[in-house]
Amino acid sequence: MFLAFEREVKNDLIKKKINNDERFSISLDEWTSTRNKKYLCLNLHTVDDSIVHSLGMIRLEGSIKSQTLKHHQKQTRRI
Image (cartoon, rainbow, N blue to C red; front, top):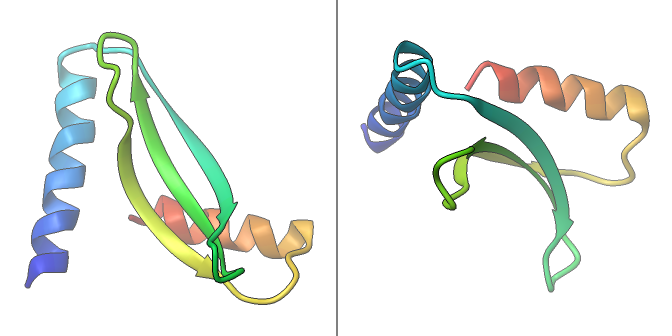
């Protein structure tokens, strides 16, 4: 239930930015936790807002080759 609400809020945020003709960009951020676990995070950045909105995060297992990373990018686009 919470995940459906979270997805709805994220979609509403993007739609609001588009409908208001606001400029924004989306970036991918790969990072490693202190427990040596890898993550890929999808972020939304706006010109007028200093806040970075996290649109989703997935855990990456093992070593990541470029083809595998492209697969994860496609998965995060569905969010």
